[in-house]
Image (tube, rainbow, N blue to C red; front, top):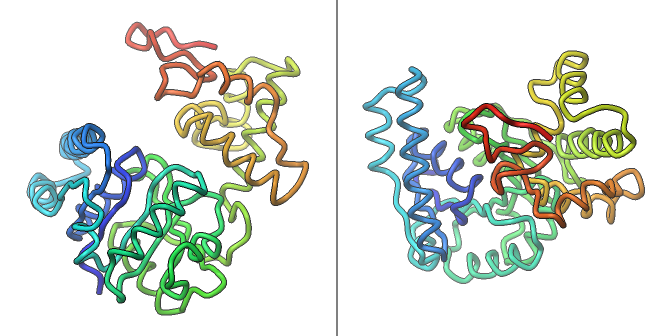
Amino acid sequence: MITNITVVGSGVMGRGIAYAGAVGGFTVTVVDVNTAALDHAQTEIAAMMEKGIQYGKLKKETADEAKGRLFFTSSLEKAAEEAELIIEAVPEKEAIKKAVFESMEQYANANCYFATNTSTMSPTEIASYANRPEKTIAMHFFNPVHKMPLVEIVRGLETSDETVAIVKAVAEQMGKETVVINEFPGFVTSRISCLVGNEAFYMLQEGLGTPEEIDRAIKLGLNYPMGPFELVDLVGLDARLNNLRYLHSKLGEKYRPAPLLEQYVKAGRLGKKSGRGVYDYRNKENGEEGK
C-alpha cells in the first residue's frame, strides 16, 4: 500500500489534493518552486480544516493528525526521494507538464508511481515525458477537491492493471468515489462540461438571456448543482479556454471556443481568482454580484 505521496503544485488543485491525502492518512509533501505559494497553500489547507471542524465534517483529532503528516518544500529532488506516488498538479500546459515529469523521472525511485491531475490531456503523451509508462496514470480531481466526491481515473495506452488498482485504492482512502476509464481526449466529465459551458457563452453572446437566467435555467431545469457560469468562474475562464482549445484541436469544431469567452480572458476576467469573470466578485462583501 502507498503511504507517502508527493504533490507537485500548490495551487487550488494541488492544495486540495494535499488536504484529501493528509486527511486520508497519507504522509503528503507539497512541492512548489514559489515559496510564497507554498506559504499560501499551508494557510489555505489549515483554513479548510478549521471550516471542516466548524461544520462537523472533520474531527479536531483527525485535523491535528493530518497537519502532522503535511510537509512543504521547494525541492522536488528532496520530496521525490521517498515518494511512492507523485501526483502532478501543475497548469494544463504541455511545456510545464513535460518539464515537471522529466524532473520527476530524474529524482524519483524506480518503484514510484506517477499520476497527472489533468482534465483533458493525454496520460499516454504525458507518460512519454518520463520512462515508466506502465506506472503512469491520470487522476482527474474536481474543484473544490475537499468537497467533490469523484476522481476520474484514466489509464493510458501502457498503464498496468497494478497501477490502476493502486491508484484506485489511494483515491478511495482519500474518501473519493472513482470511475476508471480508457484514455480519449477530454475523458467523460470534461467533454460534457466543456460543451455545456461553451454553449452557455454562445447563448450569452447571442443575447438569449442574462448569466443569472441561464444559470438558473440549467440548475432548475437540468438539476445541475451549479450553473455553467458559476462553475466557470470557480474553475477559471483561462483554464476552461485552455481545455476547449485542446479539445478543439483533438475533436473538432464542436469544441471551438466561443468568441465571448476568448474576449473575457483577454480582458483579464478570469473568474473568482481575479475578482471578476462572468460575475463580479469585487463587491461581494456588500452582496453586490453581477455581470
